[in-house]
Amino acid sequence: MGLLYKTLESCSRAMYLYFPPIPKHSPYKRCSVTVLLDEADEEKIEGILKKSGLDKLAQEKQLVLSFPEPGTDGWDYDKDLDIIDQMQGAMTLEREFEPVQTYFGIPTWETMMDSWHLMNDTRYLIGIGKKGAAMALSMAACKPQNVAAVLAIGGELSQKSLEKAVYAPVPIWLCDTNEDTVSYFVRANETHKLHENRWECPFNQLQCVEIHPEADMCPVFLEKVWKELFRKVRRTNTGRYGNVMHRTDIAKYNGEYFIENTELGDQDGMPHTWLTFVPDSVKSMPEGTKVPLMLFFHGGSDNPEEAAEMAGFHEIGEREGFITVYPWGSNRCSWNIFMNDKEPDDAAYSAALIKYMIANYPVDPSRIYLSGFSNGSSQAMVTAMVYPELIAAICPIDGNWPGERVGPSEVDYADIRPMALAMSKKEKYDYRMPVWYTYGTREPSYPVFRGSTQQHQYDFWKQYNHIPVKKTPEKGNLVTGGVGVPGDEIEIRYSSGRFAEHWYSVNRFYSNDPDPINLYNYIMMHDKGHEIAEMDPYFGWEYVKHFRRKKDGSLEINC
Image (cartoon, rainbow, N blue to C red):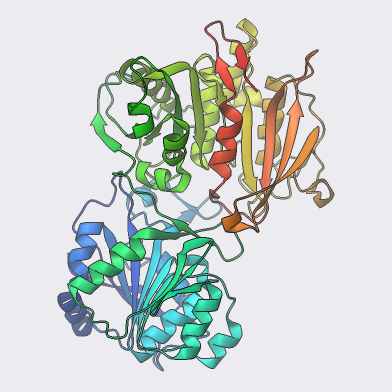
């Protein structure tokens, strides 16, 4: 569609955007590349696109490109840090004004459907020229939170940038720079020299520095940058400056898309889309072997491939021997967690998908597990509430539901349709639902307070599972670890060696049965934002895998 010129009134700056000629919404992940130049005018940008083949790469890899204009006096390596961050965030709309924000900054459904959905964890920077590359280097050194990886051709870190640098890892390829710049990124990425022009971190090889003395922005080199740098890394919001994580390989793990499929038969044959992973480890099992199934529900405005990359349950499934499915919401944006009659019934869709998987794959019907992120976390809970007979256990992540997302609110469970249905079903059979729930200390309800979404959610599950419900403090209490009500047992758990700074407070709650059962767990990850950390899914799996749902509705526990 060619270059589009967009002005941002919020910072009185402008940029050129390139959107590939593909639909805005699809089940595939889209990434963004911001190119910083000494001067950004249409003729110069067209020349770079033609020479480098960047436009063809954008079409092939489904990338959105931006070319921000420097200020009238060129790039300011200090003040422009926030401006570039704003510009990266404004790449989602083709119009010359920013998305309409409602409900605590969350865009409306109409706005989300009219926008390109670009994940924050895959924002890449290319700096070209003495000033453009220096600006990209300053972003990587001083404001790395939303920088997944960098290619810098020319330029060097200014003295001011070196003084402000936060020494957070950013994978980077450098061309034509000075020793101080190389030394900074070698240190920030905690690397050891692998050979003459490459350094790697011994505990996270994605943290790398590579020197290309004679780089040329031609299609061959750019393809190499994509395959060997950008396509391999993403940056997650799981620490103060984020963490460098790997990207998943859909083909490697046998990912299979089902697009607009009508085989589920729910809601008069409504078409649905989902992504399924059947591991090689499952395919090689003896005929007749039945394995667990994990359904993971994406967050609001996300899609199946984005969910797969965030959660990585299919990678755990390859090691542990279970099938993973990532469904796409019926409205291609979010989940109908309030079960509004005017919207598609996503709980019925979830149940139909489970039954389809049992009928068509080697799935053990007693070992069906659910997880999800954000709005999808709530969908996992809703499905378990409405169809407890199908679900053995759940491990949702970062759900801010029910109630107001920010601030206290009053909630009557009788007014929340899935909760009311859950309690109605319990009158006929006293179901129990094992829950492993993970939250972060940079979420809106931390420290947990009375009237928050977290209190409404955990009080419901405690009541449901016959766990004593204790009063949550009116204001967040850090003395209790910020979890509102501390667990009957508290465990401090550390993450992998790759991210030694990650740690969790695991609060275990037990039922009041004669033989108490650990049926609810509230896990708080230190310094995590609205994101999935590397170990969130693994810890969840390690809990839920011990439960089976028997045909009579009761639980079998294998600890």
